[in-house]
Image (cartoon, rainbow, N blue to C red; front, side):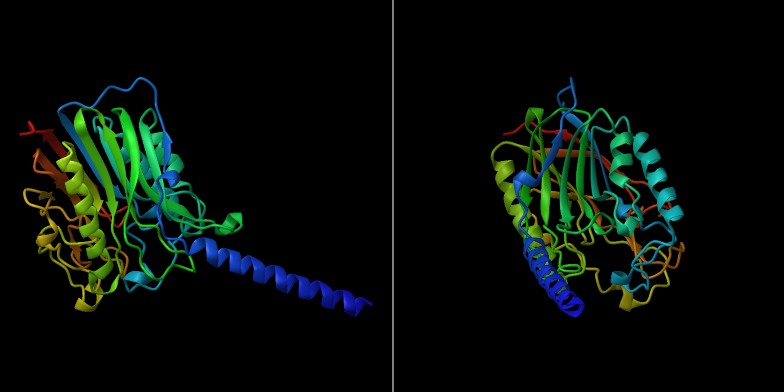
Length: 343
């Protein structure tokens, strides 16, 4: 009888595991971004956007990609940060920097992560929410596990924080990669904040490791087709974020071997509709290679983070922040834009 009970229990456990695995693979293979997945939190009594806006974009590297980190996808040897203490230091520094951007109208963030295994359960998003309290905010989780227990859950994506009122939010679905991470596919999309006076501010984070940049190029072209329609409707469009395409030619000193630059591709200029412009800082790099921990003058660095603006938007200034890649593998970029009279 004891053996029969053990066999029955084992058979039941195998069936339950099979059912769970099937359900896990089914729900996590869904790579379609939907407007219903956008989380919006409204603040009270915010002013309307004016003729000029200051915007900052920053890929936060989920709090785990500070100067001491390397990463397997980039040719490194580690999947996880060096320690929880390193993550805590990264997240605290990110919070401090963002809290100091109180004169910025809109903040666009990528790789904004909740607590999970890749950042040793340090809730980056909670600290960013605290740093940017009192703003309207949007959050879209482009990477989110389902049907996993608490220690293994991951949720990170794009955040928009605005000190001027967001009148509407949306997501623009983009083509997905065929493969996923541990069976979970990323739901690529751009997050859209529509402000008063005709402003449309968009966060972007394109694919990074697709062969020959095929997926990110399709993503870019579809996004720009959508953006052109938005502009044609009379909107002032600013798209900012991590394009994973080289926005400006750079030549910073480095000793990185060519084989670690497999992910790097130039921005295809023919993807820009007539009159649209790239605004990026070629003098301060926005990204570093992650094949090894960061050492200035050794790791390859370049500019892939920045903005694209519609023909009716003037760029008054754009500049990067040189933070020494201490707390993320990306560095922030700030732009000031002004709406031009529509013809």
